[in-house]
Image (cartoon, rainbow, N blue to C red; front, top):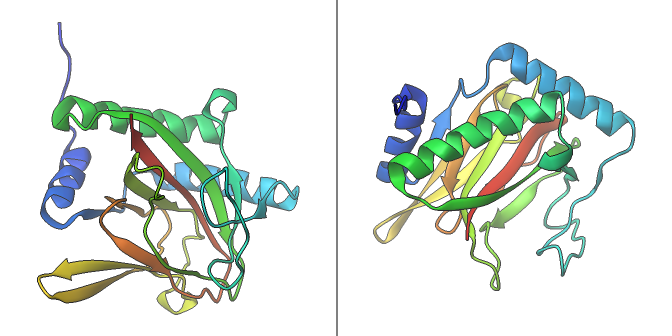
Length: 207
């Protein structure tokens, strides 16, 4: 028997994406799950597992400090356990739901931890490459401390097309907040941060 059930959170995300091309979900992960992921990120960062971010796809990377300043650590789902397994289990559940209800054909995914040290940023860009357009949805889950304040900076700014005009949507990186948006349609940037900014960032990809 098919035991598929509607998920109100996922349904809200789908509705948001269909209406405005982005969604903000503040309870995608529970507070204790966010704390678990944050602790793991900080452990790996202190162990010097992260590397300076780069511009371009994996076959053509080069660092541009004037464009982005974050440090990242790519996650391997096949080697995941603990916090990372918790994360991928939830993402896989979401992907199954999307493919079941929206027929998006998501076949692959890629995610990394990200740390933006004080004073860093990521200039306006689009999450696709000229020779690779498989990225369908971009996802950012913020792992900042629960006491994160708006004046700490690091907002995600998404640029929406409104006819001949443009609207900038500024999203505060609150602890546990998940932002999901259309990779091929919405340009965005990360504003300069005044406190270290922590997240898991990644993409759901079609074949």
